[in-house]
Length: 263
Image 1 (cartoon, rainbow, N blue to C red):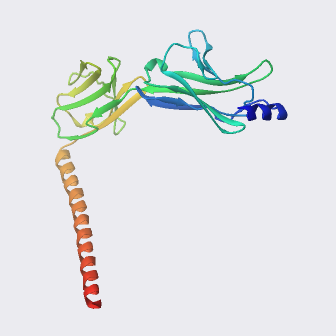
Image 2 (spheres, rainbow, N blue to C red):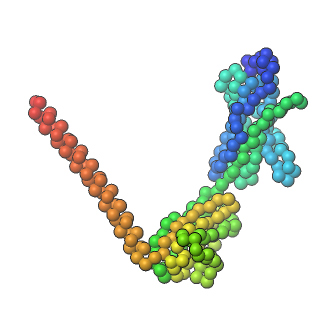
Image 3 (cartoon, one colour):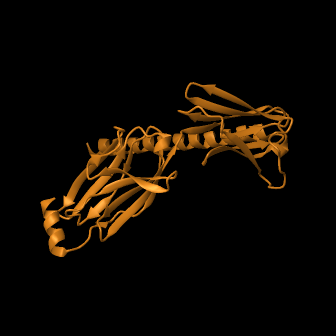
């Protein structure tokens, strides 16, 4: 860092942050590495702050490599790539939902200031099963929306018709929801007792800004048609595999014949 200090004094330039503001989305329990690439730091210090919506101000987390909060999951890693170029990254291990927010990497003095903002979003692993379903009219349908690592009842189902002409109330008498809570897993089950063609469409499970969707096709002969298409697809794959195997066998025979002829 001595070379950086000399360069800053000679050039009389204020430091620059080369990293642009950006959004980062990670899963809960992941490790976040918020990058801040600095040029010409000199004798200045890099400060990491987090926006506090309750006070509408940025609260300091770190200055240089010193962490000012008691949470051991927060850490600053710094390294130089040249005499005037360095990285000051804020690392947050074992992400929690409370870590979500806007972080700021800042360099300032009484005369000038530069900063970037990083919007960190923490999402929860979320699955929907099955994601595509072909059923006969009158069949019973069950869709499971599963959210891991959290207990919550803030899950909702939304429906969009394939032909966009029929608006369906998902609280219709033949549709109901069943909520399950087991340890750190939450599941909202959508059940359609007697599926009809107007149930065909996109069923979307939503938790906050996260969503997963499943397509349901309800039509007479839909299941048989789907099975036939899968069979055709499997046959094509098998045929291609057989053709490839035969080609390799023929190639091996030709090479063997050629080698025998040369001997």
